[in-house]
Length: 199
Image (cartoon, rainbow, N blue to C red; front, side):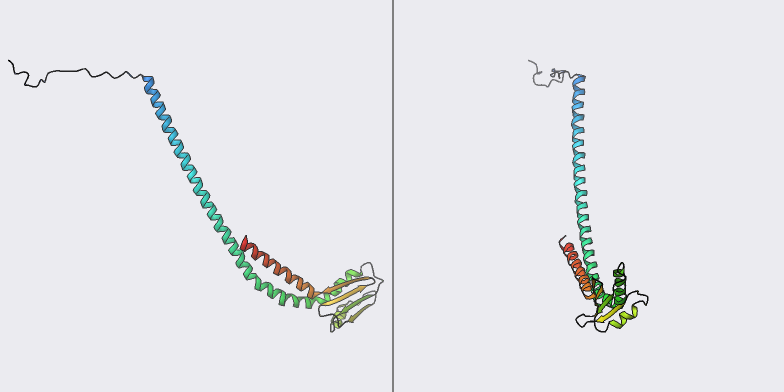
């Protein structure tokens, strides 16, 4: 009996491995194209997603910037109105009354000259507040072709006058004009503040 069965055999025992099925070049090329298409599609999707995210970020930043700009505009407008309010009050309480008082007589003469156009043969009458007749008379030119009478009426207050030529009459009322200007300025500042506060 031999001991061959006890020893390991290092001989060429080649058992046949199962043969892999043959892959054609067309199948390999088709798999490459499918892989390329999948990779291209995934890259495209990533680019579109990144672009959408960037657009959303830019839109959000733009909206924030516009909101900040709008707030800054309304804040500046409010501060401007707050600084203009005292100036408007001084203008309507001191500057305009003095300017109107200084030019009251000139305004009467200008208005009378406008009214006299086409009615040069009619007598002219000016009624003013007490104490204002002499200053008005001094402003009337000497070359009026018709008589001009200047009277004082205690019912009128300074800055008021009635002018008459024939059947045409006109009232000059500086106080009413100043009050109208003050009301307009107050309405403007009120509405501007409301608009800046509530948009």
